[in-house]
Length: 91
Image (tube, rainbow, N blue to C red; front, side):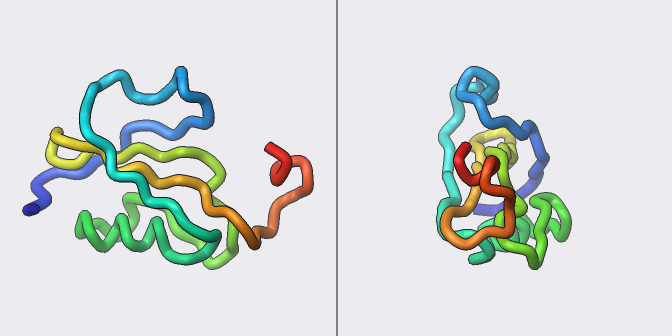
């Protein structure tokens, strides 16, 4: 697929706040600090679209990126090792 446009749409934690558009979604899931956000940036050929960090557990929300006005890439929070407070882990 040739990427013509890619944009950040929304960051949320609640299903009711997900984008209303009925587009296909490709979700990126995996352990913390495995490179999900970096992969999204590479696939979309954008350096800083999905925020990246060397500290595990920085992505704590569900982030939606619209690609070519045709589908969403969805960056999910990682699971496993993360430097976050216990209260955040429980959520």
